[in-house]
Amino acid sequence: MQNNKQLLEFLNSDKIFLQPFKDIFYNQRNYDDFSISADFINKVSATYFLNKTSFNGFEFIEQKKKEKDFYKKYDALVFKEKKIPIRSNIVHDYFNALTWLAFPNSKTKLNKKKFTLLEKNYLNGNKNRPRNIDLTTLLDESGIIILTKNSYLASLIRQKKWKTVFWDNRDIVKKSFRFFLFGHSLFEKIINKYIGTAARAFIISNENIPLDKITISDVDQILSDCIDQDSFFKNLEKTVSIPLFAIPEWSSLNEKEEFYQGNEYLR
Image 1: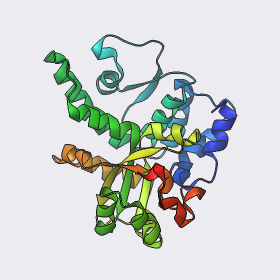
Image 2: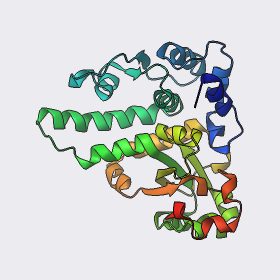
Image 3: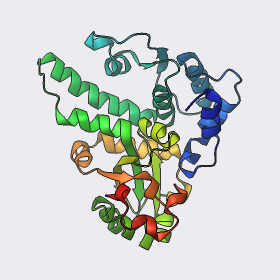
């Protein structure tokens, strides 16, 4: 991504995986002073959450240096002070801010889970990083939320049966699955057209999910409820790596059956 103009062009493209975020993008397109900065994101946040659910009292702040003090680092600042650090002109941080706007409840609860683990580790003087910290980071950075009513095909995703799921049952997937980017590093990889882009699939299978009318706010609430559950970390253990460009309609590359046959990317 070379400049802000190119970033805006990407945000306002018709890519299907960007559609759930269109309300947030639209608010940014209306500003001539678009920038990757805390001040700009705070302005977008105020507009986006006007007459909507509160942003839980959070604000974005400029990160000017790398902090050594544990309680001044990212996760502690978010949890203790409700301040989300952003480095100016860093695309990675911009997309982190975007996912905070899209999934405020889920990001808040995920931060609480992670900070609780980090603080316990810090106070106990442990040098080894517990696996559950890495699992929460993996979801936060590289997670894709998959909602479905089809538990059978969901089980095949966990088995990485990509051709069976995404080609042989292509029409069923289009009707009975919804895919939502959650991990902010995924946006960067997609922008840079990294063909090996893969996400960690957090699958939520429930026959009562209203897939036809689902909104990003609905997904936030559903995921937030999952994070609250005692089984959350066990469910994180079940996540599998899923090739993003294998998902129907997410890339023109997968419009022919050959894509799913002998493709190194899918292994």
